[in-house]
Length: 144
Image (cartoon, rainbow, N blue to C red; front, side, top):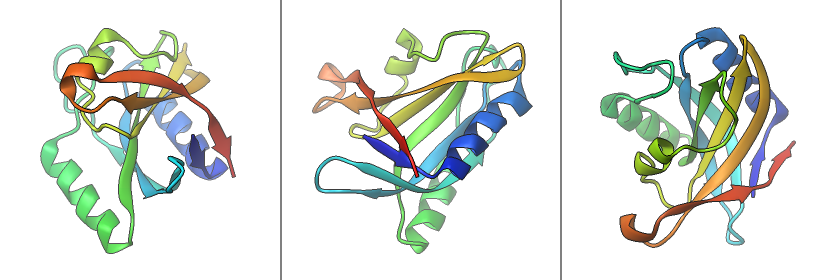
């Protein structure tokens, strides 16, 4: 399960509206609990560096990701997930989303942005032991 402050949840949805008709992307930082719960303490917006197909693909520059990870660790936070938007498409993962997801045990939050307005937001946990058996599982989101 993913627990996220309502303020952070609304911020990632708003990010999708602001970047429409292109995909937005960002990082969820916080902590992992022993029971598998991921608790979000902060979110970090990222630039979508895709120059091709930015309307249905996203990429976070690895240097930006390292910077966000380092700054998070300074605050005692780990990367617990990622978020992105699907402009005019459902809030469910695609084959591309799965192929490009590599952070096992993390949450992947997707917001459908319909005609510029955030609609449904869903979360999926990346499960598996390695790249050969990874998959997405539906994940409950709890707002705090």
